[in-house]
Length: 226
Image 1 (cartoon, rainbow, N blue to C red):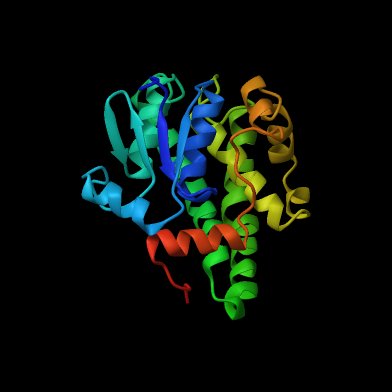
Image 2: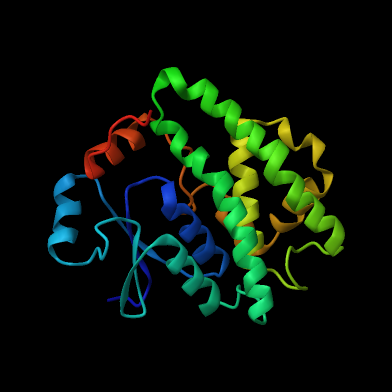
């Protein structure tokens, strides 16, 4: 073992991407075991590595962690990205919960039946513009700080930036109504580890394409979402 965290997932974003983000932002080098076949997934199942028979799975500090929130919370706490006290952690969890709710339908989009994709995109736009982005704009305004929680950079900021970038990939014009979020994106993107992760050649994964969808369907035996 190299001592580096090892990530088990298909070559693509999905639920693993937030884990890649958090490790990269913390400056932690990690390895990836790319799953391309059903046989690889079944080998993990048979070996007992997947507690709830699902991925993502991360090997870290002698543990084989599944359940994305548990993985993210552990990494955030380990690398001082989880606030200074219980109240700050509660706020971080709440804000991350909101960005997760926004990101989930974007992650689901490539798996939606083609005839339903336009309606699904419209739903994502409405969620971002009417429900979620106004909340984070308000938090930044009231907080009077470039960060969402406390005086220091936390996991909540990482997750919000990831959500903003995911929305922008679908709707380039949507941020026009949220000047504080635009400023937040610009400032946070200059943090050295984030700047590096946003550069070509990093372990950040591309926008899901047909190959990614086919691989996930093959590995996890998924069908169209309707």
